[in-house]
Image (cartoon, rainbow, N blue to C red; front, top):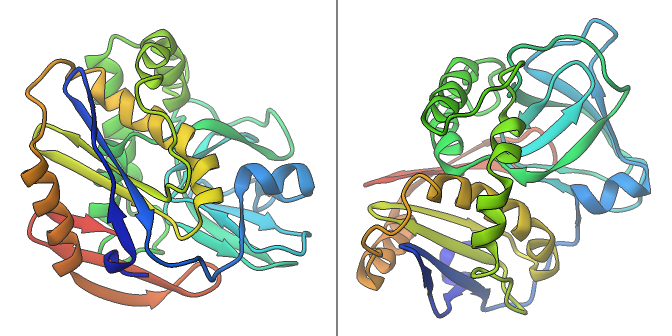
Amino acid sequence: MTLDAFQLGEAVEHRGIVVTPLFPRLDPVASYITLDEALPRGLEITETSDSGSVPELFVHNPTDSKVLLYDGEELVGAKQNRILNVSVLVGAGAKLPIPVSCVEQGRWHRLSDTFASAPHISNSGLRRSKAAMLAAQPLARGVAQGAVWDDIQAKQTRMGVRSATAANRDTFEAHAAGLRALEGAFTFTSGQCGAVLALGDDVCLDAVSRPDAFALLWPKLRAGYLLDALERLDGRATSSERISAFVDSVGEARATRGPSAGLGEDLRLRGKGVIGS
């Protein structure tokens, strides 16, 4: 699905944060459910073995639905918390390894047999750093780990967060009140399937093909967006021209296709001021 398949909605600005919804021009064709829908239906994500492997986990999808695991979703529990390095479409009945990065550097002992889903997706700054490291080899194990740890440490230092295990989740929990104070300004709009976040010169776009899936992803994505925004409140709001120019740049970016970790292909975008997947 290309950007031609989406239409920009009316932007919402609050305290210098600008969020513009995206709406589909076409009815979705692909059928899938999200991680948070699949876990209660029996989907399991576990360590690869009793000893575990930091850059890789194992997923078993016993349901009769495809499951979308979204880039940056945080998985909590087992030996240490991880985030998904890439989006993975897991086939019905599939069992497969998935590439991840550790977001809890100070723990390596088991808290649970399976992973649960965190109520947030990684902040856009961390996801950008990870995407840059993975641009050449999206499925390479461990390539982005140093950048992820550095980003978490730097953010916790800037935001005054102390975490016994350097857990990314602790940053969200430490600033939960600030996130709650902002989230009401950016609600989900019926039919929305994506969003463009703008903070000054930094712009981030997330989209999926199904509005019902995005409705479940939006609170998690919004938390990640707003964690970055907490450091930059009340700045000059990004102009609509800048947002439109970014969307145009995404549409013009060079696309590279390669093998994916699940169904379909992995698509990487590189262009002027653009890096994405």
